[in-house]
Each structure stands twice: as C-alpha cells, then as structure tokens.
Image (cartoon, rainbow, N blue to C red; front, side, top):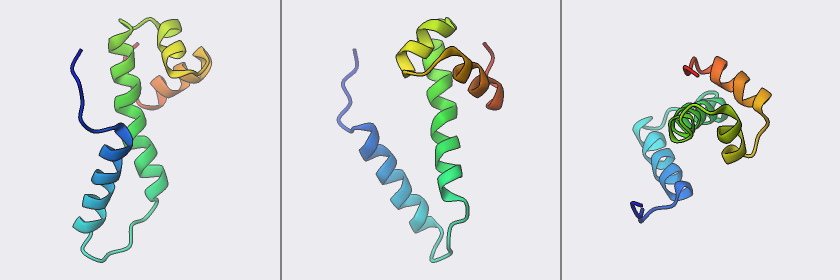
Length: 80
C-alpha cells in the first residue's frame, strides 16, 4: 500500500489556501457548497472503484446507508 506523507485534512487545507490566494482578494461565493461537491464526487467515485461497484461495501466503507450512497451517485452522475 502506498504511504502518503500528507493527511487528507492537510491536503484540503493547502488546496483551500491556494484557492483563496488565486482569488487575488476577491470574496469567494458558496464556498461551503463548492468544497463539499469538489470533495464528495471523487470520494464516491474512488470508493466505488475500490469496492468494485458493490454498493453495500462502498456504503460500509463510507459509513453511510445504501440509500444515501445511491442518492449521491445519482447527484454526481457516477456510474454504478
């Protein structure tokens, strides 16, 4: 298994700092919604791949129920 030197939290923090810096003083809009959607889509897609598209296993890995998983897969148009 590949070892990562950065935690997910650190990666998100660095990305946010860079994003805010790139705005060059402009105020961000709907930042909470943007961050959640930017993180959720690759999270669900990667876990579905990891679990070989087994929704029960994926939901278990994520700690959510299958109904929520199906809703998110549909929301982000992730094949399942």
